[in-house]
Length: 252
Picture 1 (tube, rainbow, N blue to C red):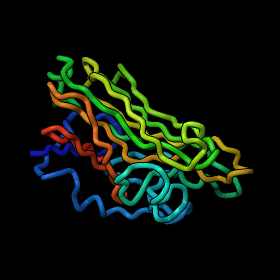
Picture 2: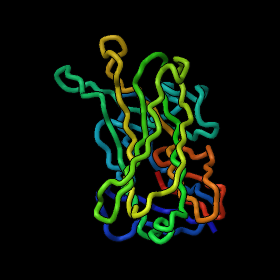
Picture 3: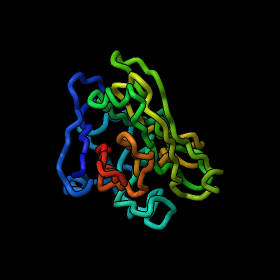
């Protein structure tokens, strides 16, 4: 039996558990194909609102659109159809936005309180992060670990990936951090933050921070911390496969 955890819903504290076990042979399912992705920078194709709370113009973009990343640029081996893109920052009247956008997802871990407080649950946070050529537009993933009163007691982050990290090539680079979930953790908030830092007079108003295959995996007691690199965006949702007997598919 694989256990899939549905963490849809608003990124605000919820007292009742949002962890819903679902029977299935793997983490892929038909719903992964149900959300349309953008074909250009001006399309509107935000991540699904039942999964993410979005601020700014983050869009899901087809690799085949050849906008930033393509089917040939370095990145996830099994990349699915789409990736996350920071959007076009141009506003009415010729104004330009702040260049920072994010999406967040609140996850209730109260069902795992006993194991967390026994320091027996580990995690793997990973993603493919990157950008375009020599531009410094970038992406990072940040996770706040909160206690029962929603106080932040720990933070883990991967990224950003600089242009030099990418050898000044358009690409997505794998980043990962592992650890033990801190005692008293009851909730986490996962953020993807895309930032435009390049000169808009030279590179235009697109926020070319890019990301794909975001993954936060909880490993059961006694299992080593390890994640597949095969989480993939399927037109709007990311699914994770764990090598463990129990697969925690956190529905990004």
